[in-house]
Image (tube, rainbow, N blue to C red):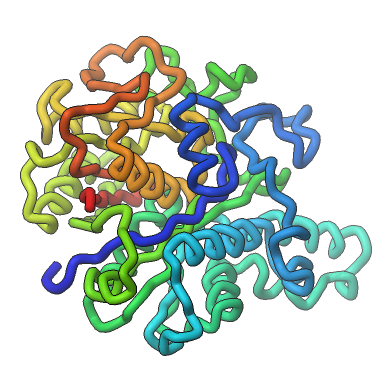
Length: 405
């Protein structure tokens, strides 16, 4: 991409590992897992009974009272994360032209919890019991709209629906908007599909782990990998041009150096997955070589074949054990629309602090997987560039390169 460098100047995290970027970062370094038995409903009848829940969160304390009954939990999480990110970035929106500030978020399932309760009202009590907000609270763009309304952001707004890859796609779109004249973009994503309806929908993928042990259920790249654990939460990031950040005198976490996206070929076509080519295109976009990358934040599906595909793509680019690889999401589960955005926030924190956070859980790599998997905090001599990978259910694939500032 030509034009000014795009910087990440603010982070807001609402995750199973903690509310707030610092709380999340400390939990990741300590290997403190947010995965436990589901408490938002009784999971006894379901084959999956553990998940990464955001437990230190009360919408009534952080979200305007009027908004709560009109919106889903996924939106509540994003509203709080956006408040944190804007404060972290030191942004005074009152002095910024409202049409110069945009919102682009990612979404996966939309407002499943809100929708489930409205369906319960319909089938138990009749159509007159269905609330007027059912028509919009579940909708994928609801969070983008609520962020725009809450903060008076009237620049270009949108939503990317790429499941796990959507968080990178949203930041990629923010980068495009900044290159065309937008001054600041609120971006990232959250998810909150931990309700009976949402869990049943996730089970249809066949990729969730049914292991009940929180420490052993989600083991990407491990010989005992059995699928992934679902989770909720995510991150909102503030992106702006280098000139805008310099004008405000605000320090950045990282620069967005390169981005690319693709889509896996049809199953049975005999063509390879898109990931290797997407990584190559992201490197080209950033004008970097594989030797410039210091750490890869892996997608880490936790499904043996998908793990092998990712390891082979990484190995083909960087060589066997040729780059440090980590997947801190083993502490949160896969957060779908919020997962890649949280990985970006974690990678930005890693670059700022000069520490590669660990992958907690895996102990023995599966046959055929040759990765330098980081399983304890590592302080390398050089930590300048991070590659974040994400793959969404159905073939969505994205890669984003971040550089230390």
